[in-house]
Image 1: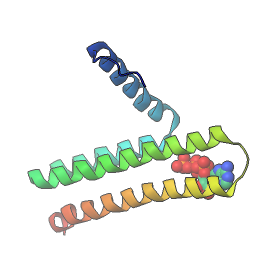
Image 2: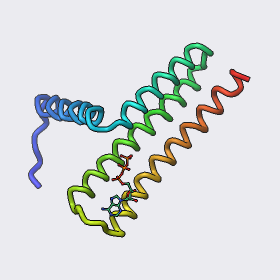
Image 3: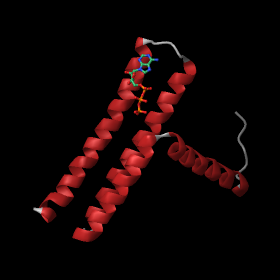
Length: 122
Ligand SMILES: Nc1ncnc2c1ncn2[C@@H]1O[C@H](COP(=O)(O)OP(=O)(O)OP(=O)(O)O)[C@@H](O)[C@H]1O
């Protein structure tokens, strides 16, 4: 593989493609809007009840973790649909595992949210 020279222009281009990817995620996936609303709700609640810097960091990481898991899940679903439009047990395994990863991330975020908010609310 040819090693390319570092170029600010190429980096800016890659960054633009990444932003286009995020925009496409919002345009094509209803789940993106659900995550967005959940993200707004969490930060609104955090500002209302007041959180420490460490609690805020935990919330930011937990939410980012869910966003990243959902985006990779979407990539995996798209790749699988592109590879084959037939039903296949290997595709089922791959898609179910990717969905399981999202669920794991969401449960992790729920646990973080519970640890941060429950003592402040009850
Ligand atoms: N080609 C296939 N072969 C076998 N099983 C499949 C196939 N495509 C989908 N499935 C099954 O259907 C489930 C849902 O797949 P699908 O691609 O429709 O995701 P989705 O329900 O749209 O997910 P999301 O709500 O995250 O967008 C998969 O987890 C898998 O169990």
